[in-house]
Image (cartoon, helix red, strand yellow):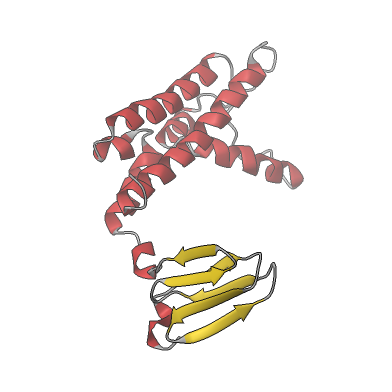
Amino acid sequence: MGASAGRIQPVALGVSSLLNCQGWEGRHLKDRRDEFVTYEASTYLHLKGQGTHLVAKEINRTQDKAPPRAWLLGVAAWAVPGLGHLLQGKWARALLLGGAVWAMFLVGLAIGGHLFRIGPNDQGFSATLQLLPMSANFGAGLLYIGCWLTNTGFAEQAQRVTYEYGNTFLLCAGLLNYLAMLDAFDIAAGRKQ
């Protein structure tokens, strides 16, 4: 385990029969039925047992650190839906994800949806109940902030038949933008294509 323990992530594999783990610094580890074998994979290990052969790969923690560019693209993806993918040249994802967020947000406002925020009249438990939908709305980035600055979309329009549909569109737009932001971040960090 020594000096390389900080770089290597432990790996756990479920086994259904007696296994012999060989190949890790010459040690032999045995396990009983239906338990987990945990080890640090510094080389390729071959797990042998009654016809079962598994190979564990080395996992290096240095790849987990995201470059600063990934953080900037993540913030850009949150601020303007689709921008994170657009800046990386992922045009199809930018149009699909960003376009969906923009469309849902604008349609939600058009059909009478209500954006959530904590107002001066909200106190105690009422303010707490506003936090979850407000954080979902906040996911739309500058769309939400622009509405907040112009006080657009915060008026109750419960008399409209489409009021609840509008709320749902607005909430889903923010939540989808959070997912798009994470996708843009992962692409920039090299975790996915």
